[in-house]
Length: 171
Length: 444
Image 1: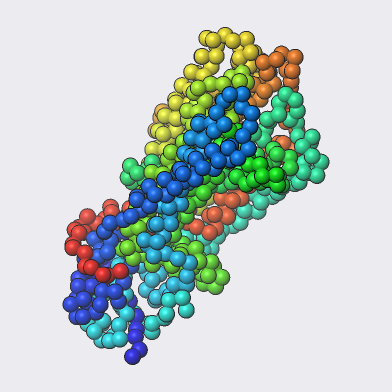
Image 2 (image 1 turned 90 degrees about the horizontal axis):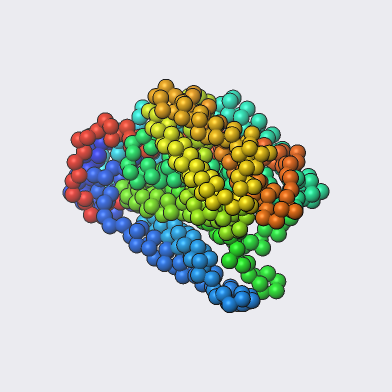
């Protein structure tokens, strides 16, 4: 059966939320519905929830610290210089390198986790006819369905409605 | 924001302008001076620079410290404003973050230029050489590489992460090869609630992480000097002194760049006088902080009356370097104190003129920290002179050109003012009626 993508542009988040509720009540699986907006909309479904980014930063920082301490101390021990009684592994320099490596590890882990949580990856994303109009405000509800009539009946109060044959992601 | 606002903000990217094109060509020519002078130096060796015994660190290291300082305010200010939720940050953050990245790129060139043989730069990387020897992490120069590398990578990511929604907006509007490039850069951004949630969390955590890195970078640069016993370098307050100066010069370039963007791109509606008023107050505060540190640094040297240190002190205050010293005091302290306390003085025109003066003053400050100390070492029979050569001046001039060139390129690729943050600000102003409702599980 041919599936279509229905894009409906709503003026604000409450209208979009109500449309989503109607779609779900009509039997459209939630996974087939996608909401999009040009600004953060904390009141939309899926906008909250627990984030593991701070934990990722912590883990990344710990790994970075370990890497920093290792590289600064093991390289000193690898070719011990004559230090006149001073320690081969100098604590202050090791601390400085570990500090920067901690920050680096935490930053990289934060970005990696944020990209993962957002489901981002370099790919061609099909742009729908209403995507560029999001900038004017409003919320776009996209639903992939085999029954365009059902979608239309649930999205009837949208400011604009567009229907496109479904493209496979990455095609 | 209405469509006209969007068009105005996107105009430099989508259509460009005659002014931008001229700026790009002029700055490319100036950057060409850097390339030509550096090429000449590589061909004829480091002897074409004015550095010689005992002044082995000259204008190149002055420029290095200056540009790393310039890089300071961008990410730092952006992170502080984001974390405190200051509404006036919205038109500032992107401009500031870009300054950091490009200033670091320019500043990072100077150690390579100073090396004389830049192809041996990899000796500073944590890689063992042919004999299995690793770089010596006890050296402050290695600390520099680590700190600046971390800051550059972190600042680049901190610039990129909040730009993703705008790159996606450009993708949705662009055609042809530009669309393909923006598609790749936007990482498949669609603006779903889940993506916004992850992005905002990511930006918030990044803002927390980047602050200590920013402070550490210039502290570590100061330790290049403070770890030695050179007169007037071996100081415990060198770290905070350098950080204060760095933030001061960073705010100066931010004010200057924002005034140029406001005038050149007609962004007066977004980069408003309120923004300059707020930045001006910050600028004034940093002028006072900088003056305090400068006074404290010189006071302790004068009170200690140690002969080697006093030789440098008098060289700065009343000797060969006195004109530079007093010019610095006038530009960095007297002029800001006369102009910035007044609301009219914090308007874009006067504030940007003060900012240009402060940039010159801060360059002189870096010069005065480095050169007189090296020219007057503790062993009096090695006292020397240093006069920068034409090649060094050419490279210094070209560095400014390179910075402007990189910034122009950036303006042609990404909106100078963050579109989505401006939209969010406008929406927050106009709409207070959205009450959260229970989330429906499973909707993307």
